[in-house]
Length: 114
Image 1: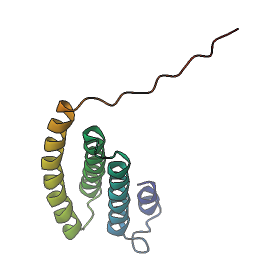
Image 2: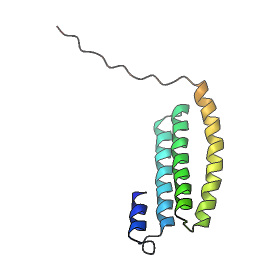
Image 3: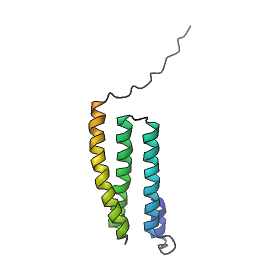
């Protein structure tokens, strides 16, 4: 998203299309969410967190498109569809996360002084 600020500040939209940068941002957010799900080993709390990470990125992209009047109708349409699907998924994961026990954090052992 920082790259987009520079594109607009220096009027480089012709060389660096904002829609391509936004698509790349969404691709990275999706990869991050997938990695969170993988590392969570099926933990419903991690799955919900991953979905919310992806939803947050999509909301940010939609806000950026609207605020900067970016002409990217196909991107806008795909993001709206993805948001709808992810919201439904997040609802299911939220219910599962509430029913599942919270993962316990490991306690640090204090060293005993002689």
